[in-house]
Image (cartoon, rainbow, N blue to C red; front, top):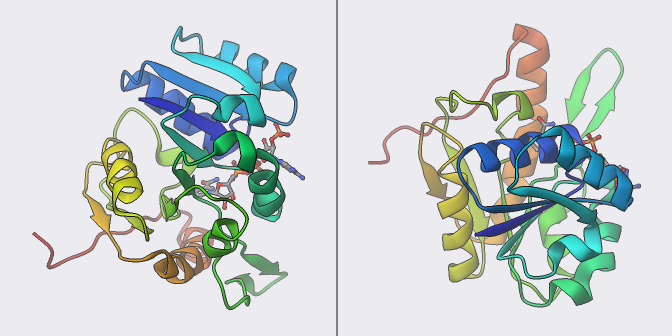
Length: 210
Ligand SMILES: NC(=O)c1ccc[n+]([C@@H]2O[C@H](COP(=O)([O-])OP(=O)(O)OC[C@H]3O[C@@H](n4cnc5c(N)ncnc54)[C@H](OP(=O)(O)O)[C@@H]3O)[C@@H](O)[C@H]2O)c1
């Protein structure tokens, strides 16, 4: 599978690209606004399977594209690659949380999730997931957590579940329609607060599902 990570120069996209290459994905492309920065990030991984390109070039020929830019850049980035993306599934991992000094992280007050707003600017089917997996946990020992994925397009969701299932020791679980991203993105604020309070990289495990 060819996987492109937009904003793959950042903490999450870079860790994801590294992990996917280590798992044997044969074609991983790190995307960036700057092709040189993307190529440098790819070269740093010392894997023949990883290359770098502009975000727009990275999506061409991909089977799955991961939108891993900073949350406040997600909509503009999606708009910018929409034509090149065509009908290729787009996985949004972004959460637009906000911070209040001395209090903690708050979920985005917008009625729609960021993933739903991204769906509004691309024709491609959008899925959402990986919000509860810390970049620091995308390492050789897969975290004992589940990965929750939602989306309205069955095929795109299946492809996303297939990919994210490789990243965790737990399960990749179908969390329903794309509207579930409102809860999944909000959960990021909860996890950030837990991490701060308990000095941890908290994750999620769902009980009662075989
Ligand atoms: N960090 C985590 O543990 C974690 C876990 C789950 C989900 N996420 C989600 O993953 C996404 C990335 O998180 P991160 O921690 O990796 O963020 P980050 O390192 O701050 O940024 C990721 C990349 O976004 C791009 N970017 C920054 N500003 C931009 C702009 N104005 N326009 C276009 N691109 C811009 C940059 O790439 P270039 O400058 O190379 O273009 C940057 O390397 C976030 O949406 C976050 O919610 C993060």
